[in-house]
Image 1 (cartoon, rainbow, N blue to C red):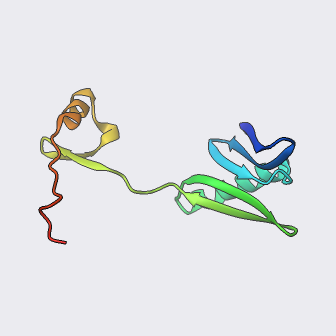
Image 2 (tube, rainbow, N blue to C red):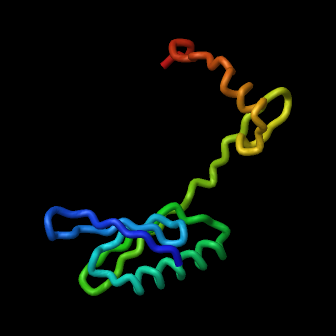
Image 3 (spheres, one colour):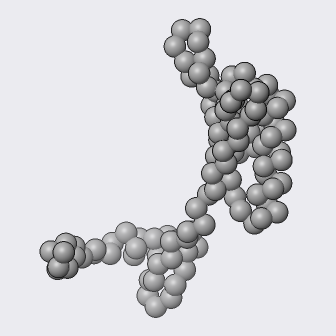
Length: 115
């Protein structure tokens, strides 16, 4: 597993650790061990992959003797644009289509709609 870590705190007091584990941003209580964090992330990845979802980030905190896991899903919303008669994801556009999209004039509709 890829593991990068950054500790956030003042002086010697560490309040949370920000890290990246296998491409997933994780914020964890510093009292949670690296082994526990990696195990939890592996479980969460399997659970979310089996549901067909992607993880945006995971937050791990301690409450008494329990580790609280808060997992946030990546937005399934995909922006689709219509350029010259066909719909496509912007990721599929070639350079010419991206230039065409950037050159589009966007009309301001404020004031046209009655509140």
